[in-house]
Image (cartoon, rainbow, N blue to C red):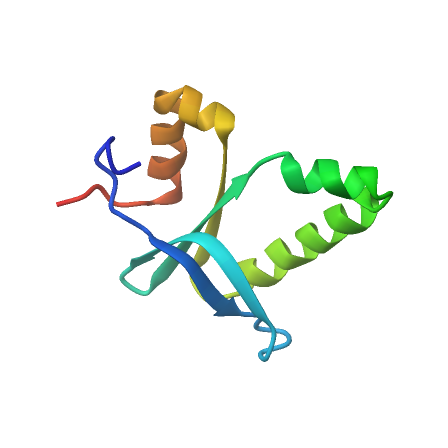
Length: 106
């Protein structure tokens, strides 16, 4: 992202669940753009593979959907999911970040 000229995000920032305010969620990337929050989440297969091996894939998927749903309830929040394919195809990464509203570095 930085090499391609996007604003440097804050990393591993704790945000609190708006439904259960004492419950923290750590997000991979966070951009603060005025009064908006843009959350970047990097998806890999390791967590899913481990959950599948342990017979807990459905629970892990449910928990992840709930987490994203709660984060999306934050005021002026947008979530963009990134994956390894985006890094292999930088034009796709650029499109995702642009559509999400991530600003270019000054």
